[in-house]
Length: 371
Image (cartoon, rainbow, N blue to C red; front, side):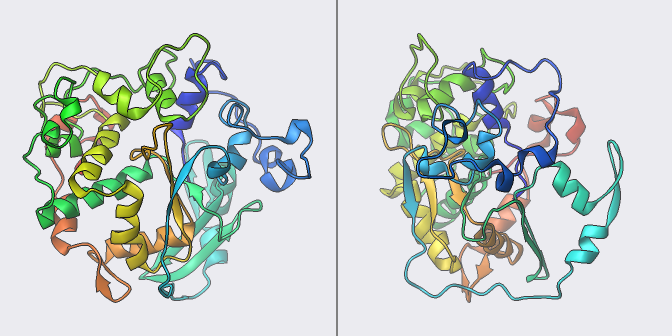
């Protein structure tokens, strides 16, 4: 499960647990942070120097390696049940592990094999489907196939997909204003923004998401979500429902794309209001049960019980493979059309490339962000 957890880095740096990174940090050797050797949280009780806590998991690396497989032991969560139906099989293809591990390519520091890449990038688990068949599945350093893993911003893809499906069904209106569903945001930076602008992250809000900046607004978001304890003297909001209405803006919606996790947190609030269901219930009812998932997933929640719609989902790798295969098959999986084909077509069309370009992301020419 290859994750680059920028959000985790931001919280750790911004809460004062780590120095703000002015330059690339010196990375530990992969061998020195193997979970099967670190023995974190082993023993009854674990030795003091092996304990991972809510206060330490982001700031004392490599505690995060253990934490990202055990998040609900640190932070409150809401279950996403798979239900009582049969699990859907992942058809077994030829075992291509040796061939794939041996593939070589040119990296920034010279040539390396795929297996070396996984080691050097601290991968926890890796799974590859080829034409719907399982050809590569490896759990590194003690992670098990049954273990949900923190997904961080991959959560946005699940919530955005659900929103697009609800728009397709008419339960949600893309051209409606955000405040039509959440009046609490009528005086916020989302005033006048449409649901589609929210989905495309082109709503104009006064919010900074700079992960290595201790003064960034992402610090206030992280504390409100309950990702870590607040720093001494913190005066900000203590939950997302109080924090999101406090974000201001100029109302110049639709002109520029800016990646901001709080847009998806607002989207989660909109979906809960439009459907009358929690985010976890929506994912379970419309995706997880229909996929025939092997394991329950779960969502982390803030102190007021709001799920982190932009960052809080945890799921197993095999169930992520089912989700990905469903997308590859235009929404069809496990003998049923789980998501309308038109929904996937709409997402793949992309969005305003000029709005994306206006964000200054020159290394992604021709890109756009939609739903």
